[in-house]
Image (cartoon, rainbow over all chains, first blue to last red; front, side, top):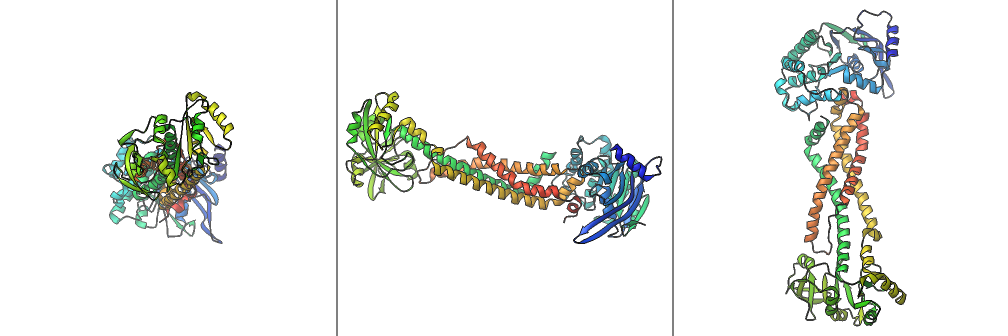
Length: 239
Length: 364
């Protein structure tokens, strides 16, 4: 692992005093669909310093979801370098990417993706169980649950929660392991405007209060306005 | 947490879970019932053989221990001859006429049989007096709803039930020896010869002596005969049990395969979520295999309980079969059910492990 880190630093040439928590260089991703190669990413360069709330904005097909999946360790890149919290993701195998998801990255999905058979509380605790950490909530995390407004909804199963509440549970699930980065994929895509505002406000609050690094994918400029910075994508490139 | 997830997954789809458990239970019941009936029937046959009180049994030439007897080829003249042999204290013969299924009627020389065995223990009524008198054991009486004074038609003759005796002695249906000989047109002949010795320890020596004098006759000591009443000595039965076990494994395999394959398809997005939050392929496989194991264990327990139901059913049915509870086969049936179930979970498990996370998360 130390070799990978040193190689990576050499590759990047200029070393900032505090390296960004996400550093992407020359990232490409090519999918094979039938006999056709689809170039989803065509050389993406991106730096995100720790503690920043960045919105990745782009139309459908711009490559933002592919970038999201690669940064989250859900799928490997075709070429290029991706450094997440000092680890070269491009050099990782399946098991290492699983480990990355277990410890370093938290996800918030558009469709919440809560396990329907478990209560909200168990959905959150499952992440700690998988990570091999104690599943009991700390007082600090209980405060976050208060902030998210779901402390009294923890015993309910997802079907008994509104969309907004489910997304708050998903946020709690994503941050309980104190991930280096929180990746949110269209977190308000399934919510009404009131709940959208609330969830975006919560993400912003979370970023400001805890310094949680957040990369949010959205095609909605209003949602992007909650972030500290917007990065635009088109045709697989940062523009 | 994992156990909670597994229980939650199974309880989330109660109908599928119940059907899977029931299917595995039927598989276990099939095996245990077959083994129970096989053991029960053989054991009750052995018990009845022991109940005769004889130390030596001589069967017709060409018959095996498991072949049903339905002829009377041995001359009655062998009875006094047998009685004159060294250490033979008492000799008698019976004649057997087969009925449908496993049933048969036995013609008995009651005075001689009473001396040899101590006599039938009658629950009601007593030994046959008239030619049309018949005695049956409690088991047969209960299955055919007979009581003393009832009438029954067997081998084209009407019989009066004169007595009902406790089971475990010689046969289930008995009439007087000369009556059955006459009906079979075999007067002067018997089917089986029994000898009681003055010293049971001499059984092996007497059997050896008789074998040398009665070439071609299967001659057994009581211990030898009863030890032969086991599944392993009945080739066809053993083969049949293996066939049933194979069918049971296939049934378990198919049921669990279908249930788990459907579960994996239905839970594609959930599996993707577990992987997305750091769950390894091993964890996903472990969840599915544990669910399968739980289904198999529950199925085994329910199957064992259902076996008591088939026992009651067998008890109520008018057949001559007895079903025993064979405890030693509980873990064997369980292992068979678990093996079939785990085999059925392999392909769905592999599918779940191989699922691409990004595709799984976008699965509708």
